Image 1 (cartoon, rainbow, N blue to C red):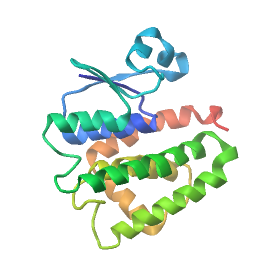
Image 2 (image 1 turned 180 degrees about the vertical axis):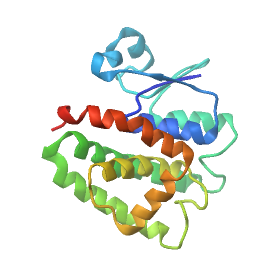
Image 3 (image 1 turned 60 degrees about the vertical axis):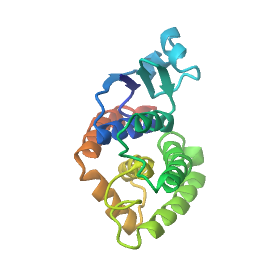
Length: 201
């Protein structure tokens, strides 16, 4: 299997982190969205909307980060969606995508949306803080799961942008970044964060 992705892309990072946590033998193929790689006929045949990441499998291409991770979980073993906590894992995955990853992307790329996106993120972080108030390391317990992946990437980019993170979320972010898979993802993204600064609004 091959994952077509970019180390800066939030949803690419979410997917690659999930694959790393699972330990799947997936080759990472880096795309260059700034040079038209998402618009080639070959890529559009795999991802009709021209979005990454895409997992290339013997059964065909799978696009959208959660769908990719769900596919791998179905193949087994279950690692990211714990038995008995499926609803919570998927619920926080959706919340993280909609109210953390999307707004942090707006913070990163579009100054005109920064006030509104910051407010959405603050509301989402308050939900995360409430869930973590009982002393759990991560949203579903002692292990990083699907519920944490979008939040992990969003917290890292928020930190890089100098955005305020509530104290419980900063501690959560530090626990996440202590894992070697997440630390490697952060390190891979950093050169691209620096190189895109001139492009950002």
